[in-house]
Image (cartoon, rainbow, N blue to C red; front, side, top):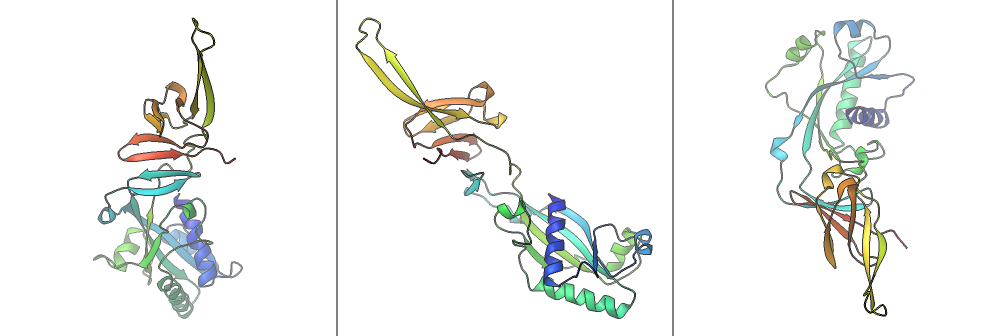
Length: 254
């Protein structure tokens, strides 16, 4: 996921600063002295400095979202804070200051990282990541450059806060299919009854044993992920995953 965020940041900077790829390189390596010695063209270094959970953004309640065409009611997604150090590297200090200033203006003008710069699958998780130039938090630029064994330079600290869906991209379930069940009284063969069931397959192993329901009845997910529950064509199947999270499995479009 973080490599997708790297690509998204580079796409944003190249378009909004802008940075011509034939003239300015974008690097994500640690800007230590060994790396700096190999810089041969104007370069923007975007170094991933810190990653941690944003505990202050924890929210309670339940939210509704879409995943793979299925409606999910879940607890709010965890949010992560990702910090980057941005620095400019050119052959003259004047050019460095100009490039760093252009980076600063582009970031101040964009409070969120959105498509088309935000790449898949991050572009399918809402809300979009926020971006801001972060305060130092008591650190100095000298602390950073000492930590990475680099030469002292002006820098920008970019703070990105983004929601993370741990289950994004996982196939939850195939659309339900209708199964007709006919029963006959052996003593009176002329007496028969027919009931429809809705069945399908849940791909998530944690769903085994969980309740599935329609407005017509209740069932459980069996070993292997299969389920069968009373229902009629067009009914939605609700899978109860616990912790206030449910998945609404939609029937196939007719």
